[in-house]
Amino acid sequence: MKITSRVGVAVAAAMLVVVGACGTGGSGGGGGGTLRVATQADISSMDPIRGNSGSDHQMLYPLYDTLVSFDQDLQPEPGLAESWEFANPRQLVLKLREGVKFHDGEPLDAEAVKYNLERAAGEGSNIAADVESIESVEAVDDLTVRLNLKQPNSALVMTLADRAGMMVSPKAAEAAGGDLSTKPVGAGGWKFVEWKRGDSMTYEKFDDYWDKDAERVDKVVIKVMLEPKTRATSLRSGQQDIAWDIVPADAESIKKNDKLTLHEQPRMWTWMIYTNRASEELGDPRVRRALSLAMDRDQLLESAYFGMGTKPRGFLPDGYWAEPSDKVQLDYDVAEAKRLIAEAGAEGLSFDMLLYADATSTRVGEILKDQWAQIGVDVKLVPREVNQANNDYFNDKKTPAFFAAWTGRPDPALTYRLMFTKQAYFNTSGQSTPGIDAALAEDAAATTPEARKAALDKASEAVYADMPIIPIVFQHSLTGLGEKVEGFESNVLGKPKLIGVTLKD
Image (cartoon, rainbow, N blue to C red; front, side, top):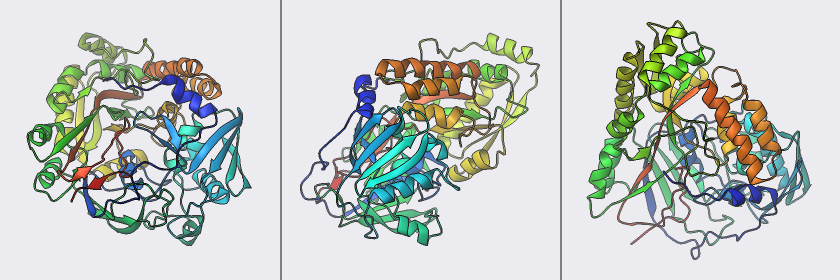
């Protein structure tokens, strides 16, 4: 996979004043009609600070614009903040757009941003680690926000392009007792209409949206369809206009349909094995490395993903500006894997592994079971629905392993911080990966692209040495588009936004 991303721009933009055009293109916000979208999983929460699934973003983006936006290559762009500047290494100043309103009519001003960032760091937030570098937030005037930092953080700008930058109405949050999980009020292009849990989400166009030139349909209905074949069939039959996460097994049939388009794009979405380093079964790094060495990733890529992806070396793809260090290589070596199992005294190892209850995940699980059996390891597969599996592993810690995805984040430091530091939600061990904190501190203090890359290389090497999570494959983003759909764009996160999508008459 080749992802083109300009290292100089990616970092330098975070250190300088950035100003951009207000609009996304288009003319007059037209489009009309109802856009019907099929998705692979229900949202875990409509409150951006409380969700626990990376696949939530596609259902959050219609409701919530972010302080900072990004283009297809993850270069930072103006969002709700039209510009920003590091006044010094420990002070980030945001200039907000004038006239932005929340869906309840309340103004999105500096006080609202202060409320949101303090809320993200508070009780009940799953993203406190994202904003831990912020010591205090000041509303300098109605449209100026100053973030005072505990220590420099070069990743903060693009952190504000993720959940931490999704602004909710303070008035609505207070009325809901601090939890907007079922009553979302944001400042995105569409406002909330209805959530039928496990079935669908409905949005309608927000007339007072700040970007008057943004192309938007009148209504969006996102239908939850857990079975991949059901999503593909509904697209072919014309019941849906867009089907997210087409699986490789169904891709060819969509390619051959003259009325449909298959949008394929490399992305950061990584399928991998989360392990609990504090567990008895997988606490020894030699065991985790043995599991990695026993993986034939070529077989997995071809047999389960039909070649529609690439083998990883780490958690960021080759070609991306923060790709892993050259020292990081994931080899296939069964003999070495057997030696490590013996050295660790783990002969006869058996453990349970959660995975999603879909055909592709089951296929991967069965292949892994066979591959690990070659080194005397027995894995018991525990299939569950997406949100249940996430809860069973990350919240209840029911198994020492979980085959699932990391969906990527706008800044590479977030990927390392949210999976490998002690307080990270996605790190079930509660133990920091040795060396990761020092590497991330060096990255946070970096002021040049070259310095960031050097620090992130150290992060990739620290993770590789400890192997707390075992990457398997970068799966390409596959989206099915109906014949009426125009203007669809994805990005290297594989998390598309619907602004700019229209339907032909």
